[in-house]
Image (cartoon, rainbow, N blue to C red; front, side, top):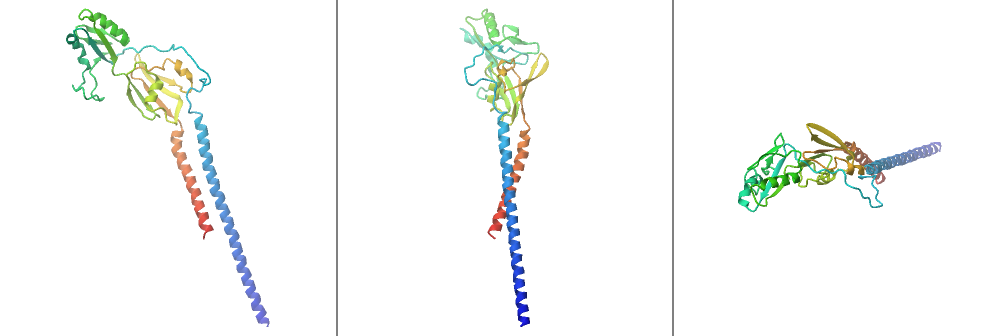
Length: 296
């Protein structure tokens, strides 16, 4: 009898120990699952917080002309424009017509393309033109050497017309700077060298031609590089202020260069994207582990 009671007690004790072990394992498992869920939620919240902070802080640096009133009409007198003047190394396209077109056509050979083909209008086959030499002169048939540096194309057209009255009846002279170009590089959509047709071109118009600034560009720290009188000038440009419209550098000159500096997020975006992706993947991995444990 004693042996039977002792066997029953040992069996009960063994079952209780087994039950306690399973109960302890279940509690531990639930605790592990809770920890995993907490980590997954935490990583997701951190990733969302980083994204929101980045979005909010970046927008403040995006708008142009923040000091310009938007609730009323603003009118200003243009006082900072001065016509573009001809400089050494400019290439002039000169077209002369008169009542004797065959005779006046001797001036127009400069409008031919370099390789002789008028169908090929690529940049590798430019118009010949009249090159302004280092002394600021060009050399024309019948007329000879003409000092052109420092003159506007309009003034030179009128001057040549008066000279040509000696040779032709009712001459008409049209002149353009055919190598008027500006380089735009840095943090813009389409960095390039742009040939300009309009002598009255602004920095904002050229930036628009380049596809505008990227979202990561510093709008208040643009550099305009301009060579004048044998000196190279580095000029700061601030697109966040409407004072740009009053600047003497608002209108561009031949061979100007515009550099758009990226902010730190240009690099940080790559690094931040890697970190956020890592956090997101970690969160997804933890969620996968949680689900696999729940359905095991």
